[in-house]
Picture (tube, one colour):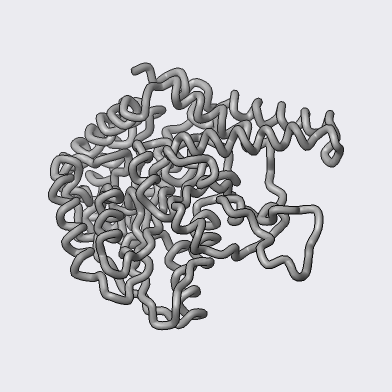
Length: 406
């Protein structure tokens, strides 16, 4: 697969060695141009005129349909959001949970989702229990064992009061893949039939998502990471059960069946589809930019082609790092996707993870450090080159050798 085409379209990749796709992907120039063109068109039509509404409606519908196809769900089950957090929180806070119900949340969730669940629990007097998945670090070659282990610990931690399970599709810190479809099936068979909320921040644009997105009750993602779209636009696929059970929380005119008027005694003002979880005015030009980025990704190959390319690169990086004295990878085997987390031996390396990030940044090599577990994280993408990996590993070798000499 030729990975240079998309890479050559990203100005952010021309003057640096970039491994932070899990934080934010670079925006290709054609996507930026699509955003600018859309903005100009809106101004030509007039931002609030009768002429502009058909254009805006078409942009919204095209984007909703495109993201729904990506998730393999009907368009009426796909709500547009600004980011992963809003995609998670807006349906989550409308679920019919009762005092004393239990939330089972994995120990590898992003702080934004954790905080939302904690505040929900405080307000509604719910109990939060932990699903331990941080311990599962077998890597790609032992994915079947990981899946079995996750399902086993899930069975142990479920109670007759568990009403919600929160589990990421791809863990943002260790890089291990979770068996979302199998988890959903296990929850459906449980007497309490808990809802399943999936943080898919590290999924869309990197790994195939249709099976997991269809299986989850709430599957929230963003376009600005692996999909290389603009920040400020994402989506959430919601199950029919959530459409029936969850009430709107943060409410605006886009939530309403009739946005032109408010009727005090209307018993059913909200959309009956995913739009009940949309709020108000959003940045329409971003939609054109995200669709263009998704088109460019498709030109790099199918979802399976792209994940195979990403895995080959992450395995190379994982093996190179594993061979460096004083460096240990979090996963015991090659990563199932593009997240490669590793540590420098604290007994022989005085540099903290943040020190390492700063030292690499001075060389225009960009990775990040994480706090839980304490580690460094580098992400490989279809835009990543083998030369990028060589540059990173050379600098890690140099830093490790310097520390060993000290």
